[in-house]
Image (cartoon, rainbow, N blue to C red; front, side):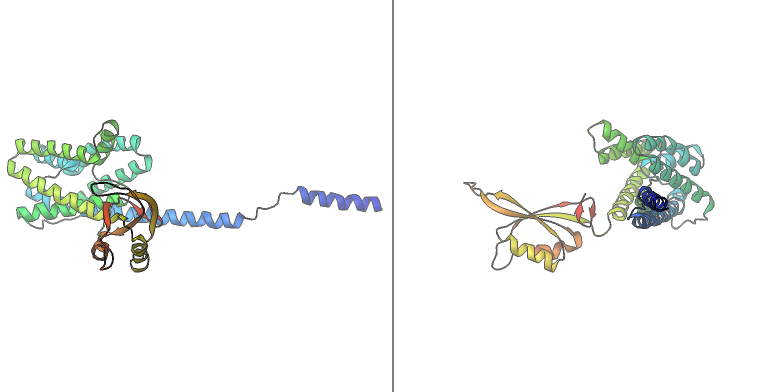
Length: 318
């Protein structure tokens, strides 16, 4: 009996030891998975809302300003407008057809999700031009070029913020820039010069000039929508009074700083001296107070170099 009880107890202990033990962090991983799912859902909803607003804004720029007055724009949208004006084919169909090769290129060069979002944005713009009852806002040429470009640029910018494009020119520019030494801006500028030249030849020079004005208004609006008012500026400061400047940046401006060692030299002899170099990121709105406090009555003005920062996240730049 004792042997039986002993074997029973030993067997139960062995089964307990051999049984899989639930991992301690399973609840944490479950909560993390739920958080990531919620975050992705909110991000997808935000992107979708931005794309919808972008298509509506671009539709207003086209139907409310450009189309009723025979104006065109740059990029694939400009090609679509020019073709629609010369051939009489409906603009919504041309926007979809002409952008198809660029969507294929986006799928191969950038990614499936980007191509899918762009296809939804371009298709949504075509649907908006057919379904939404836009009205003609004005027939004044200057107002048409300015505000037509503004609403079209706002639509493109909102779509870009949502992870898509309404115009395939950017995709073509990315592809060509990877194959050549040209920048994306150079490719887009060259592409639009060709479009405006063709418009000047087929239509008239005045229409091409207004098209350039429309393109400038649209491009500036895109920059404003993507970068915002608070464009970030990277500031490098070289001064022997770096500690006072660092305290001012941290305590008065509530900005972080990075300090690294270097050498400085100036004058005819060019003697090099050890110094500490401060790097920080501020917004364009903070430039004036920062420059005003760059030097004091007791300290000379430091050497300051500034450049635009294309991306900024809390804790660093990328």
